[in-house]
View 1: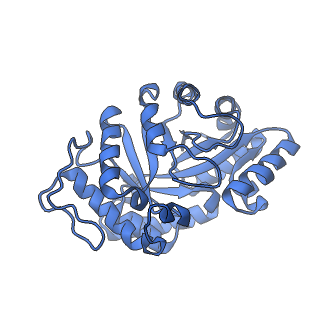
View 2 (view 1 turned 90 degrees about the vertical axis):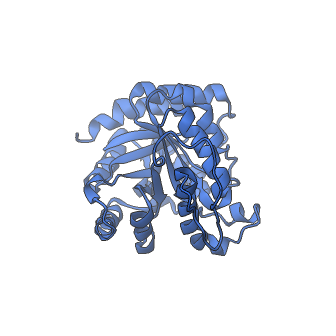
Length: 309
């Protein structure tokens, strides 16, 4: 299991966004040996949320050889604008992009772009296929109920051929895992929506589904995103982070967040990571919620060494 870093694109109220600060964060992650840098996507949320593709593009020159990726709201963004923007990021990163597609779980994101939230799953399957068609440049194109790419030749194409890897986001439902196996190049799970036991069960189901679709389970990657983190020995600070910050953001019970996320002492955080590693997680995207640069260093110095190699 290795470690990567979320871009801190949510304003928790501790600092103002700036390119200088975001670039310094990415350079720190790069120098500490994190494998990738990753952004999550929302148009509107309970906290201010800086645009994910724009933030990702802005830090490319600071990211070294790290992979760069983002959860993208495939329906809200739309396949054609999404394909165009992500192709540019793949080119400008010299082929380091991976895209994690999700329908999104916020009805407000759909409302403000006048798309029916109840259609999201039907649209999502089509959006994935439309994106592949737009990137591959085939003459046939894709024709569905919602999207049509025939005779649409977007240029320039991504650097990676036939396309950058397309990971599918799923919390682990049977339907979601079938979609990952059928349409994806990787599986992205959500830390605050699973446990090590639940992840292990879902991974076993996914491997069975991959065989059904003629894909090799041994070479199919997975990762755990939205692993919010604050490493501290101060019990009062731990409770404040869980109750006053993360509960309000994620709308989950405090005890659930305590069980699943990396909040607390280095030993507590390492124990959780070891359990996810044993469950089969290959990569964890950590997301410091404040003191972000210092927290990256603390994680590498005090948490990661405690997880068995």
